[in-house]
Each structure stands twice: as structure tokens, then as C-alpha cells.
Image (cartoon, rainbow, N blue to C red; front, top):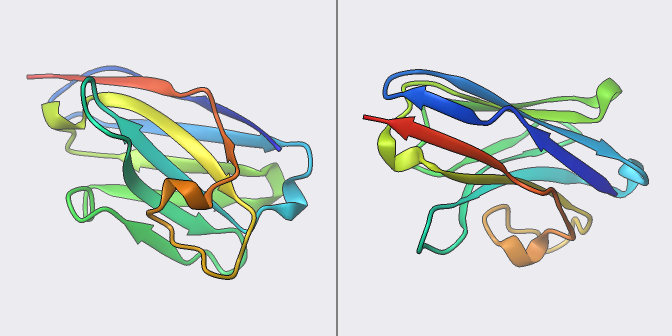
Length: 125
């Protein structure tokens, strides 16, 4: 599975961005997709996840209500719509694909087998 993330950029606080993650290759083997982020000097942090089948979603508490993860199964693409962005949302955002359904924890990066290259989101105050 290959993942291509895009959509990052520079935005003022309060603004919006939509990130995209296009999956290719053996995409049928993926059961879910997740978004993580890593700010300078900090550990990688879970942001949101969605199951391909059924569309069940999961969110980090601090982005809940401001962000929406969605998927387009026909395009093998997952989106992360982020609104009311804050400077603390500044980070490199990574998408990832999970393969294993049993014992899958959406917020555990070790439960994802494939990762995209990351897209930088910078929120200015």
C-alpha cells in the first residue's frame, strides 16, 4: 500500500484546511486509515481514524468538533477537514493504513502498517 498525503499549508488561526490521503496498491487489505501529527520536539500524536467499511470514526479529544475525517471508497482516498485551526495544530500530518482488524487500536501508531510522507500544516497566530 502506498499513501500520498497532500493539502497542508500555511493558514491563519481560525482558518481551515482539508488534507487528503490517496491510497494505492493493495488497498483492499486495509481496514482503516488514520491521521497522526508530529510537532517539532514532540512525539507523534493520533488525530483521527476511520474504518473503510461502515465509516466508524475516532478523534483526538482536542480536535473533536473542529475536524472531520471522511473517506471516498471509490477513490481510495481519506480526507481530514480541519476547521477553527489553532497554532497548537501546527505539525507535520501523516496518514497511515491499518491492516489488522483484531486488536486494532485507532490511536496506536504501532497498529498501522503503512505511512505516507507527511504534509506540513502551519497555523499562524
